[in-house]
Length: 337
Image (cartoon, rainbow, N blue to C red):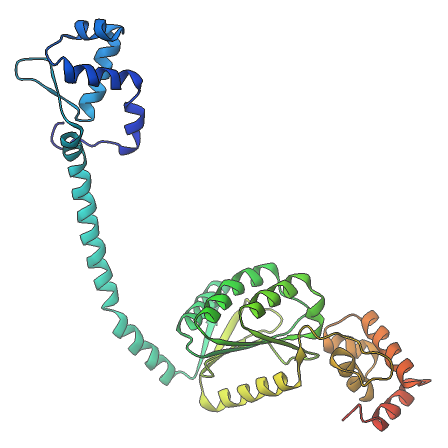
């Protein structure tokens, strides 16, 4: 091969067809034959022999003889000659990669210092735009060392949200991070959310549900909380809270909501005669507070039809003729405490 020639390694099998292999074998055993003689031995047209010799030359398996004609080269020698330039390129690339890695790793100290300064100087940081929010969440998840507590309001998560959250949560759980997620009761009837909960629960996460949640919130290591700037449009932006006083308050809100929640898989209803639990108990408490079915539905994030069904079940269990009587009897039974 001439110096500086490039060979496409992917074409190697295409070059070595049956005719080419036959010509190579004959060149090894008959190095002084002319092309016509070799063609006669192989039973091939002379032009096919010439093309095969050209292919073998490109692969380094034949070399021009000083006296004319071709000399067969061993596969080992041909491989050494053919691959040497490629191996040199790979070697140079590895050197460049190693140098780039060293330069990037040298910035780790600056990055950590900048993070500490950011936390110290800015107890509340605003991040705008969905891509930036996701980048921040990825960073917090990657550096999380102990725990993640999350409030997840709404009647169910979108497919996009589930696709984004599942691998992050599983990676955290695999690292031994404690995850507690609190959903609204209405999410129990959302198939995608139920499947997501089953996935992370089987990996070690604890999941509960409650009737009402104040806002979407994530707390990483109890040292940084993420809150939406607009609870109705969470993609607009998020606030990162690091102020110790505010964090303490937010952690207490989560702990209170968590203690009031029930296991996500807990049944909504209870047999007649037993004290209500879960979703029924939350409806009863709001019913006892004088809320209408519409107000209860809006507050709990479920349909008015579901509220009407639960209220009817409660009144039947209490043998109440009206909502006021149901509230009085529930209080007498200690169900409102």
